[in-house]
Length: 310
Image 1 (tube, rainbow, N blue to C red):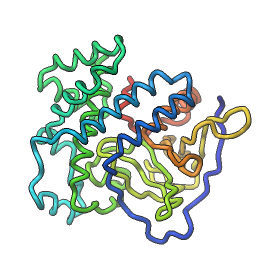
Image 2 (cartoon, rainbow, N blue to C red):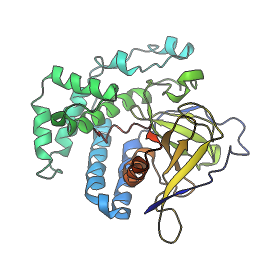
Image 3 (cartoon, rainbow, N blue to C red):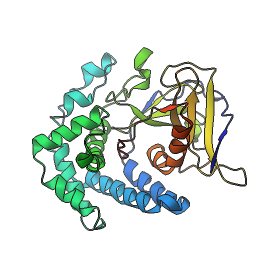
Image 4 (spheres, one colour):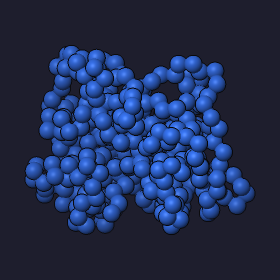
């Protein structure tokens, strides 16, 4: 596979006021698991990895649907934050309130019958961790740190449980928050986390509109196309993808690379594949990250908590 430049177009026409912020759908993980299973067939070198991730994500949906959390916010708990444009679900503030560790235990139980022998020690190691040790792993995730070699394989499981806890909370919000502005417009308006990638929607009410997708709570928020999500400049954006021999896109995910700040974020246009999904397609397009890393010009910006790298 090779990298090529792609002309990606500009702002959509016909939509004057797209929704600013989209809260997650209740079946977010089920749809992601379906996409991961599709990608496992389409990307043979990553088939085992993507198949396991599909099982993990399906377990996330099972936990989201089947477990009632011990703590729920009181009515009106987020009104002040929503009114003043502050992230109502701040990860740093709520980490010790949400019982994400119980979500982790339920996730491990759901995975217990579906993991290979090489992955079973990871489940056992997580079950042996104390609450304080699990909190340390959660802090690594929130601070975007890879941790030690011994902990690195545990972090995606912890991150998966945290995604469930924060997505559940986002689903309980009475209304979406306002779109962030200024320097904060690349951070999730719900929880303040980094995006995993951006997605260009194909639905009728938001066709051609680009949204950043949160790496933690699954919220999406509108960011104008042909705008770097890091430095917010335009004019020096380049689009790289992985092409098959026939010249068509092997995967819909592309890298939107900025010549101003030399960073890139994956962008997933659904016009190429209506089932494309930011986190899943980011995992399946790791060859694109490797290619750009070898070139050495652009540094990855998107954070995928299910892919903890050193």
